[in-house]
Image (cartoon, one colour):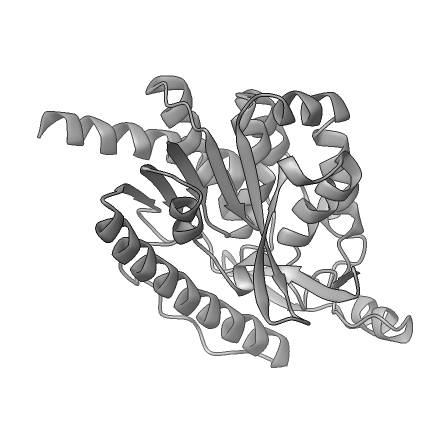
Length: 298
């Protein structure tokens, strides 16, 4: 069974979309299983339906307002670079309302419902393919994998949304008596889960460079310190997932292909800019093309 795994990475998901487009449309790969974490969960369903152009249009035109109903950041451009700070008014309002997070992302849930229709959901559910999204159950201290085969439309859309909720900057969701957050907090690259579900060949798109090329700038305030700390922890989780995935694949004789970003795309993946994301999508497509041409020549 052939599987596609897409890691978390916020706005960098546009790059993953470009890679997946090449694999599906140019190489003709038919994935029976697609597992996504965070931004990967937003891509997975339309890729499984071969609705690549539709999800490309959504991904390359999405804005911060499409994601957040309470945006926790301020963005100021200075000397050609963007400096991210805290939106004190929005954050204070959120806390006064009793929110546990700096920002709220209910707009993203509406975007998911607008983008993935009930008709598409039913078509995918009856297609014989399986799409799985990763979520983190903070209350039970567990990573959970939610399959489209197990839920109705409304509940499945909620799981996709939860998978992409990067707390504490996005909504913390209480569901079934438990608190749920972004799947990347527990499993950024769920290769092991794909193999457990029977995959014999896995293409894994990792929205990070294979070798660390990033030297983070000093933290300007408590907010930037928090984002740097979370980015560091997610990088460690990602590296661990990849090591475990490689080990399990080797022992199970599973073919494992990696697609890393060739360069650092952004240092804040919670900023969504149409121009950049359009370029990243094309860059992902071109990168997959070059990588596969090089492999075929060997």
